[in-house]
Length: 203
Image (cartoon, rainbow, N blue to C red):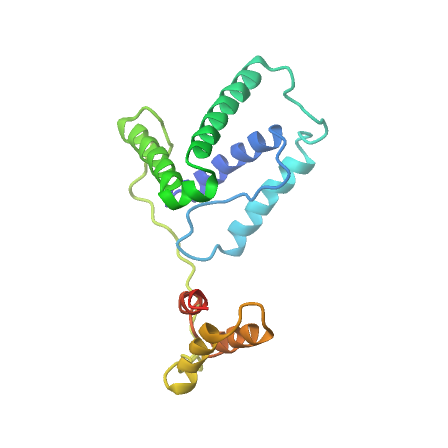
């Protein structure tokens, strides 16, 4: 998806949704962009209606396999299957998924795939409307800005009581009720998910 092309992203997401349904997907989220802020109600409703139109008006879900017998689809399926089996084989050679992650093999594969995609787009071998073709540099993103009430005040996280919340998490047994109580107390004192997660890692 392209950061500043919400309308184009909706068209692109609609095509991706149709392709996914043709492939037999059970559930999928339609996205409108790489969100720099919360989506407004108009955008959220449009994305929801895309779901409804494809599901209720297109007739695409009335048949179990609407593209069955297509030579191109079967060919692409075989190609994807070979690629997946090849990747699974490399994972097995690394000793399974756990060892592949610990060794950095999975992360390396994801990085290589992303770098290849970006290189193809940069070279113009893979076209992405609004990014490397037909780009409108004058467009600006409408940011949803929530008004801050004058009565809003930041929670006070200073002091011994606040620090004790995190230490209680770290010292509690993971399976005990005390751990959950400590988590709730920490969030009530305004600690972030990152701070709480760091404390959990010390359990």
